[in-house]
Image (cartoon, rainbow, N blue to C red; front, side, top):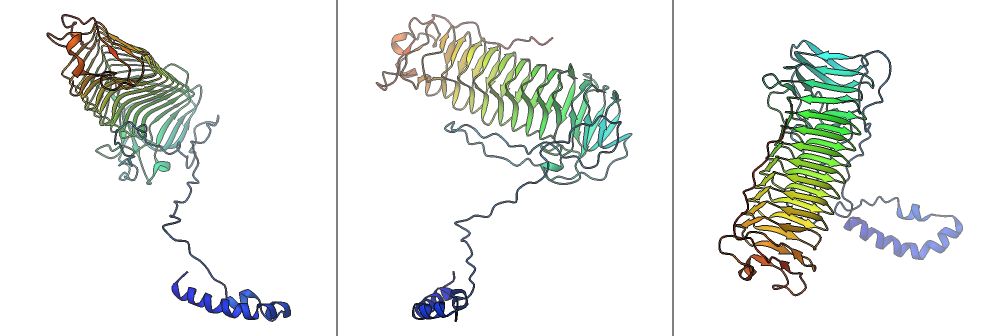
Length: 454
């Protein structure tokens, strides 16, 4: 209440005490009549304003079984929530608004085919230029094939995530691009910005989906697959919120690239075989949860956050390169191995093991601030080369001993003169030891990425 209202309240209360007994008993007046009706406004500091609830539909409408017709307005999938690094990770990666969410496209260009909010129920082939407004849906038991050189553009006509156009596949998708004439999925605007369209959605599409030599640009999620099966070869995803998201899916991905995305690839409850795929210039490279990951000959570089972040995952990394990220590889409650890989030049930690029984062998861990950080003794490291790391080669943050025997620590280094390169019980009595003896007399063969994509 205001100051004047407060003074008025005091005066009226004094009068009210004098007349309340009489007035109320005789019915001459009520408290409301004496005091008036007051409206107290809450403090804007105590009760901040809240945004109105989004009452739009959360997902595209169910696919009908009728012949193709104009379906009217189609509600797209739910709002994209960008990932935030785990608490205590030390990575300052803010939530970001995708720049393309409010970017409208110009009037539809003169192209061969314009599709607006369409349901496709018969096997269809696209070629040339295709423009999509709203959502195009591929019904179950229906195959959409795209020939080499096809360009599919998505035209946004209203701002916001719920107005983003997209392609929903519940049947089968076959993209047959070539090296010389790839298939493109791109916004109608000239220079793609993340969020201009939603993406390619595979929803319970368990047929043999195939994507070959394809470029996906400017989407909220370049590929969003749930309970689906997919093989990709030579596909690239760039300038997206999330390049590839897989949930409860089985995927093989060889010889492609994911670049310039908030998250390069996100896996949850999925199985993936990644070979010779490059992840470059993303905020976070790969985020893996409760999945099975085989990664060979891949390169993850120049991430603002983490290169590979895995939780509760069975993994096998071979011949990989993880370099110039904030932290290279972070494994929590994982099992598996990291072998013959290069983990170098990461600004904080090259490799972190937390409650993970992971074997590290034949790898080069170099030029990171901390080469290897462990939080318990479940993992082991042998046959590796540690060199040029800034603060420590190995940092034991737990109370258990960690076994790092038969590694190479540089020319002329022995187990007796490595104390300054290790943080363990010699520095803090509550820490476990890093057990390094015996050490290798010469460096193992350098780690080089495998070229395994066929």
